[in-house]
Image (cartoon, rainbow, N blue to C red):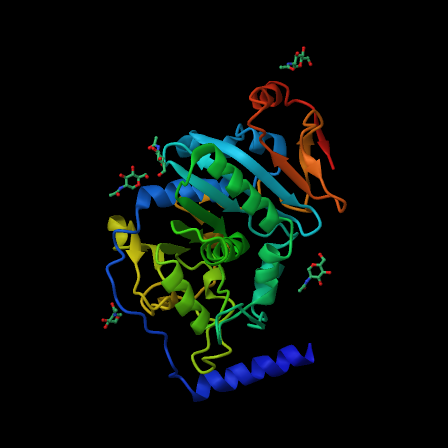
Length: 353
Ligand SMILES: *[C@@H]1O[C@H](CO)[C@@H](O)[C@H](O)[C@H]1NC(C)=O
Ligand SMILES: *[C@@H]1O[C@H](CO)[C@@H](O)[C@H](O)[C@H]1NC(C)=O
Ligand SMILES: *[C@@H]1O[C@H](CO)[C@@H](O)[C@H](O)[C@H]1NC(C)=O
Ligand SMILES: *[C@@H]1O[C@H](CO)[C@@H](O)[C@H](O)[C@H]1NC(C)=O
Ligand SMILES: CC(=O)N[C@H]1CO[C@H](CO)[C@@H](O)[C@@H]1O
């Protein structure tokens, strides 16, 4: 607690004394052809579906959030890290002809507490093979040191065996956006994937300016959507006076906000500059809303039931694999085409694990 307060005081002093600092500059290119509103809405629907707690409905793609624009989705693997309360899935969208990877955001008792904690997260880990690039250890480990990474990489491999080299789209909301970012980078840097697109919604900052610079070079097709006064993209805070230690967003932000006045208010998808920290986008307003964090494009991006890391699953699903610490991996086995049908016809009896 004392360390926190001291750090807070240092930051306050810094904010008052040194208003100007080093800003990341990235060569301006025309990225406007990369942001596609329709695609963003589709990916937001995936980011919403991954919050579903009923694993049977999610795995068989029969949940109420699994309709609308995502009906051509085929689930390949659903991964639940029970110990760390994390959830992600890998599958193929046959309309987009792309592999989709989606990460769930935090499922803690109180989103408020989670957001308050974000204030104190420091960049404290050097990213491998990127001199001076630093990230937040907790976000990094949530992807790299849990069941998620091996589950996702093996599912991506299986998808290749089934459908060839499809483009990969990685998405997630909030903390899920942070994990999606590390996953997209991992696929590019460590797995040699050349066509990875990242789209996140309301994600926090995850690394420093050097990291953001590497990130934008390696993943130019990245869109980081923010919404009105959503608090989370403002956190952990950005302090222009600690260039090495402070957090810095990677580009490209797209800020959803209302423009116009009176009865002429309309929603704008504002495509921001290539610095990652465009002062005229979400940074032009104060991040003071949790409600704005939970809805993007009118789509609910939060758990369908809050509370503990509850798992609801059809007891008839025998094909899932549970490891020694109780993590669950549900895989579609291509040699058993009837499996999905069987489960979806008999998905009445749910049980809690
Ligand atoms: C945007 O994405 C949708 C869905 O993939 C696609 O149908 C549409 O053609 C795209 N629009 C543009 C302008 O690229
Ligand atoms: C990775 O997780 C394991 C337990 O899940 C833990 O013992 C280990 O310390 C973690 N590694 C790091 C670098 O934190
Ligand atoms: C999907 O993409 C793959 C790889 O790019 C390609 O071989 C295949 O023909 C595409 N399928 C459709 C239906 O467009
Ligand atoms: C940002 O806004 C300021 C004032 O509102 C304006 O002068 C400036 O040109 C804007 N910058 C960009 C990059 O749009
Ligand atoms: C496909 C399948 O296994 N369907 C079963 C669903 O459950 C009913 C009764 O519980 C069985 O009669 C079906 O065979």
